[in-house]
Structure formats: structure tokens, C-alpha cells
Length: 475
RNA sequence: GGGACUGUGGGGUAGCUUGGUCCAUCCUUCGGGGUUCGGGACUCCGAGACGCCAGUUCAAAUCUGGCCAGUCCCA
Image (cartoon, rainbow, N blue to C red; front, side, top):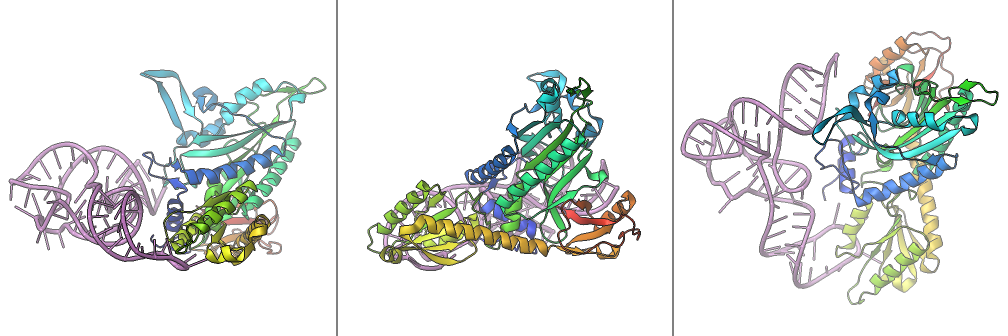
């Protein structure tokens, strides 16, 4: 197996090599940006989905599933929305040999599929709030270079759509989504920023957008999710109306919450190291790998011990895999480290004799666990591993930002920049030009470093109404 | 939309300038045998490729044209 490219100096090459060699995705499908989910990648995805479902349902959202095709006239109803997505939709224009009278859009996102039906579902204030989500594939005709998980044309998409009685209730729903994502990210071990996007960069059709971004080295960031407040921008054109208790008619205010397999890419990007992927136990395809180490003349004793330990762990609800292949132990270590398995148990003659197994976690720490209390020992190691993996990610996160006080500091920056911004669009664009990237927006929950209070806008120098904003190069 | 570049086994590559010594190199991978086995073993046997279509030529991975795919830069 070849050495991986260096993560610091050749991040993209490193990322692609890890995704490929860890067998998370097969990009050799014949359509650009449409990759195959491998068995190993699917395992990770299921845990990702499980956590998203757990946290969103805890906030009272219910699963639904809408069709993938949207009639063109429905798609075109909200004019900002279609302007934003026009250039990146796939069209279905033929049925068999005939041209379709009404062309169909393959959903790039599902507002325009769902809201005509919301108009039927919502009649009374008693129908509100309406909180539903779906996990489906969406399609976007991406013209730039595609990357597994990070930029794809067929997206594994989580999207919540809601209707609330009024703007305040919708704002409350946005808060609830932010809190739900906080819990999801906790499970993924991912530190991130919640940023209110500048107006020129909000979701097409939204009143405002809050996006989640993570630093991925240098001045680059990756958006891993977003929450949008639509006000009644969609409920009006789609005719969603409810009758209030006093008999008056109102358009509900809507929100959405979107996540995708980018989260998986983010987990690889953030936690991975020179040896390959590193998964927190919460989403690891396997939490534990058992490697038997045969000795001459032991007649398969270590193999059967390893097998029995694996089934004990399975019975305890752990995801364990036994690697009893013919490779030498060292080769197996490399392979499972590349694959990112949090904990390895080595079972050989020494272990069999002593009643202990050797445990090595993916951060390289070696301990022994008494076989008698195997389940508890594994639990403890995985808990410590998750905690310390998170701590390492937090440390890297804190180091990823620097305050900039002059526009001139932004060019060629090796960090994501925290800047004072007066809020004016012209200044925002000046900042974007200076960093050759984007003004990501204003932190919802405070800046990622503790820079004190901003004194003036980095672009115009004015001091009234200045707040902190983040400038970076979106990946 | 404008420009530049690149396509060789599953992955990565050599060969291309100057056509022939190429039924195509090396690493990895994959299948089988043997010896091994506490951090990527060794060895033997075997499998697997010149993006597509034309053209030039006695002869094309190599030259020419078109197409397709991909990458990068600029708008």
C-alpha cells in the first residue's frame, strides 16, 4: 500500500486517497459526481442517518417522503428560488419516445415538491406547527470538479420542512434546529461555526440563512449544513393558508433544515490523520476490530478465542469485526487503521495465557483489558477515545482562526479570518475580494476565538454597528 | 461562456520529443501454491491496459483530425 499524501500540504489528494483506500466510496461510476456507496461507506452513512433521525425526531419532526420529480410549473412558482437553482437542475423531458407536455425537474431540493401538498395539508391553526423531514437523494448539475461526499451531483440529503403560525414561531423553530444540530455535531465530534450568511449569499428564496461551517485547513472552510427562515416567501406563491382561531386567514411562516453526506466528508477531513480515516465510535462502521495472532502449534486456539470475544461484544450491542484472514497481523493493523476503526483488540498466545487482551485505540494508545470484564473495558476505552478525539478536533478548531484588522492581511491567509464588518454589502464584497473567497457571515453563537469587541469595519473603517464576521475560501 | 492541459491493467505509472528493438515498464492490486505469522513477509506460478472513430504509413501507445471524458485557470 502506497503512502498517503500529506494532509497538511496536499489536503485534497490526501482526502481522495483516504476515501478511496478506506473503501468508503467508489467514484468509478460513469457519471460525473455520482458515486457508488460501498458496503463500508453505507455502514458509516447509516449511523450518520440514525443520529440525524434521533435528534430531529426528538424535536417533534416526523418522517415523510415526497416524489423525486417536480412539474416545471410548480418549480417556477417562487421566482428567487428558481433563479437560484435554474442553472443546476437536471430535466426529465421525455417519457419513452414522447416529449413530455409538462417537463419534470429532478429535485435539487424539495421545497417545490412539498409545498403544493402543504397547501392541501394545512387548513387550520390546529394543523400547525407542521414539522416533517425526509432523507432522500437530490440532484444538482454541478459543473465544477466533483469530490466524493463533498461536492456531488446526486446528494444524499436530509431536509426538514416546517410551517409555523407566524414569524416568531418560525424563528423559534430555527433555534430548535440549531440546538438539534448542536447535538448531532456532538455525536460526530465536530466543532463548527453557525453563521448567518450575508443577504447576497442566502438560500434562494429565504428571508435569512444560517449555515454551519468547519475549517478544513488554511483559509478554507466546508459548509456542512444550513437552516433557513423563509417567512412567508414560499407559503404565498404556493397558497399555503390556515385559518386562525378568530377566523382570519394567514400564511404560515416556514423553515427548512438541510444536511447531507458532506458530514461524512467533514468527519474524514477533520479527524483523519497520516494513517487514514479516524471515526468516532458513534458513526464508525465498526467500533472494534479483533485481530487474532496465531502462534505455531496453538492449533487455532487464539482464533477461537478471538471469535468468542467478538460474539460477546456483538451480544453487548457493539459493532465488532473479526479479521481472521491470512495476512500477517501488521498488514491488518495498517488496513484497519486506514479504515478508521476506533479500537483494535489483539488476541494472541500472551493474551490467552494472561486472561487479558491488548487494546490499541486509533489515537495509538495501548492498554490491556481483562477478558473477564471485556464489555466494560471496551466501553471505557471507546468513551475515552471519543472524548480525546473531540478534544483534538477542538484544539485544531481553535487554531484555525485569526483576527485580521487590515484588508491587506487577507490575501494568501493561512487561517480563516475573523474580521470586523459594518454590515454593508460593498464592504462585504471588498472583504471577499481581499481573501479571494467569501464572507461567510456573522456568528450566531459568538466568534470562534475570543477577540474582544470589534472596533471598526475592516473595509471602510467605520465603527458604528460593527460586528465580527468570518472570511474564508469555501472548499 | 473564454483559454490551457491530460487520457496507458482495479489504483498509480514508464514509454510519446526522434513511429519499428512494445505480443508495452515498474509499483500496487487480484487468483493459486509453498514457507511464514506479536507492525505493511518471502518466494514460485498466473490474471489484468494504450479513451473512441477516422486518417497518414510497409509499420501508430507514439504523428494528424474529429469526438468523448476529465482536470486546471479566467469570466
